[in-house]
Length: 361
Ligand SMILES: *Cc1c(COP(=O)(O)O)cnc(C)c1O
Image (cartoon, rainbow, N blue to C red; front, side, top):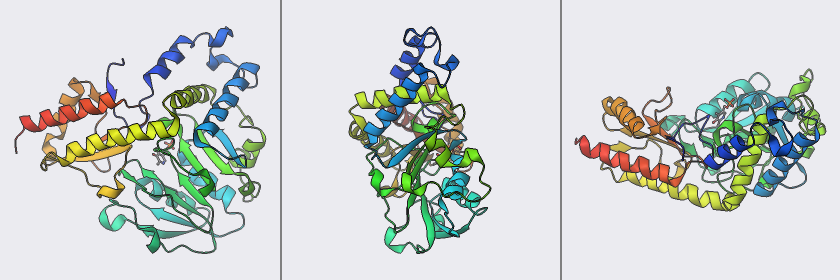
């Protein structure tokens, strides 16, 4: 087993079995005599790797044929520009739901390309909830609606999949493949790999085919989805090693019972951790309102923040690492992505009990 339980928000924990598989075939992939890192991306071996990765992802999420799967670079952050460049299609405005840091960042970037209409915001209560859809003020002439299904920093997750009269675009970077979704509801989904898919350097985009082909003028070739779709993600050199590891993670997920299987384990892990916070008689608290608490990123606070440093130090001594909250919000945060074993959450919960009992209020 690996030496520590890594609660980092990203780059984040990978399934240990995947790391061992990758290690075993690192220098010689399937008797090719080469590492995946050394292969031509257009060679027979790598073609097999990328096709299998796409096929397994399609199986996992039951992706319909009229959706393209793209393996891109530039992180989720590039998508904040790439989406408007491709999906405005002559329109002037887009709708965004503001639920925290990453939706704010998306809105900020989109303003370079369009009028941004904030249909709803939870900033009034420090981004601790998701505004009810009945109260959103959507505009009928928006090119699309953008939202973030899981705000990685704030720990706020949509408990529902929104519907709209316009195409729905979702930044799923930190809860992609963690629970069942209905692809047909979306125009486009994107996710940076380093949270729940694989190593940094890869961004997965799933896009409905009919939305492609109408890029804004002067869009760089590399920012045109149609170009990548037509070239099957091989317009230029794709992030080969990251795609390979993502492929191993997809196989691992299939072996866990697919999305249903992993979702059940994610529910169980999140329940254990939130219950420990609730049962601590106020020693720990979670700033997020109960229905919207993320099953991937669990932010929490100690009643006296002066204890944070000691908590982090003693946790690390027990092999529980990367529990510091994001610098913008402080406190603590445990990211418990797909690859975090339930034993890691149990070890954290046990440490939290222990720490609280050693520091009576
Ligand atoms: C991490 C993250 C991003 C930014 O991802 P990069 O790959 O660093 O560009 C965007 N959105 C969400 C929800 C994230 O968690």
